[in-house]
Image (cartoon, helix red, strand yellow):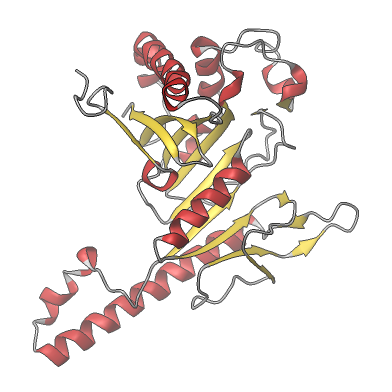
Length: 305
């Protein structure tokens, strides 16, 4: 049944990138066709909400000019305000920034979380002492806190390279996803939908030769998803989003139609293969499928589980 307000099925939702990821603390983008756009848009959205963000890459990127930069083997200080891009070195030949190693990113995230938890405990103990509030009751409020001066620190990570192409296949050492990621977003260019997939549109096309020369539709897309990192055992503890990045070019109604078509097709195809997927040994704990313009923050999505 569709909502009378939105015209969308009741199980669907619309919103921005941050809403799409459930506003979690560590978000990693992989794939192709808009990862850097997503990183910038999400970082700006989180900063606009008054929070602090460390953006980084576990691979290599061109210099990031939309936020402050931090070149150092160690992460930016916990007290840094706004957004900062963390990298460790520069490739002289092309000027690309080299991000920290994967283990260094996980270590930094873990340390930041530990520091924040200590700060929360100290703050609540001080509050309970000054207001004569029961300490155990105060500590139980941790999950409900809204402390303006003790903001969370968010992480936005680009964990893949695709050389500006529209679709990504992976070698054995790819992608580079921090294990402490709360949500991983697999990005692909939504403009591929309904068109013949060309080898020159794919980074590492040898990984999907059976899809080259075929019309990109729900059947082909699911074939691609099922052998992507989405279903790899080492990432099963994370929530995942498949994002078809579709640039807005027409009227709002025209963009909505372009967004709805692939989502409906993917959901219909899912109904046909659901039993096969559910019998797989490994799958993520949560999977959301989304489409729309990531840069403009105009997205639709639904959850499969």
